[in-house]
Amino acid sequence: MAAPLIYVLLGPNHNMLGEREPHLYGTQTMGEVEIFCTEEAAKLGVEIVFRQSNHEGDLLDWIHEANGTAIGVVLNASALARTSLVLQSTVKAVSVPVIEVHVTNIHRRDDRPGSALCKVAAGLITGFGNDSYRLGMMAVCRLAGLGAT
Image 1 (cartoon, rainbow, N blue to C red):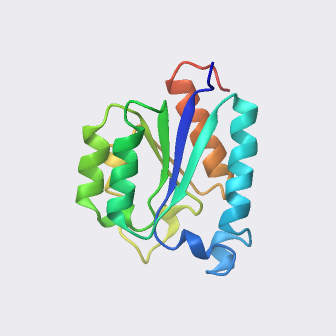
Image 2 (cartoon, one colour; image 1 turned 135 degrees about the horizontal axis):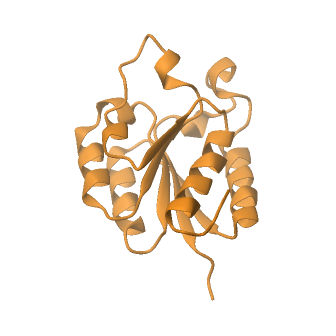
């Protein structure tokens, strides 16, 4: 029997992790974040689909794909969480729970508006560095009744 599946989706500029503003986003590359997420997923007894795109449409398509095939989505949509009404509509339209995550505490960033996505996401985890992904996967497991603590 296949392990439950969680989609971990990263939005614009995450391909530049490790180089882009390391004082905010850390020094780990996107590949290292993927390894971390894969290892943490295994501890939870789930598998992940890990994807990144700089294109909003890709994120929409992957959320649609996850609907009905995954137990949930962990989504770091970057600035699209703040500005994309179509992403908000997509999350609202699917039945699979979506947990919005951010590595930094987006509420401490005076230079940016708040999240529009959090109004429709099942939950919001922000400010715990890369542990935000682990906590997001734990939340998906809990919502799916898998008993993650």
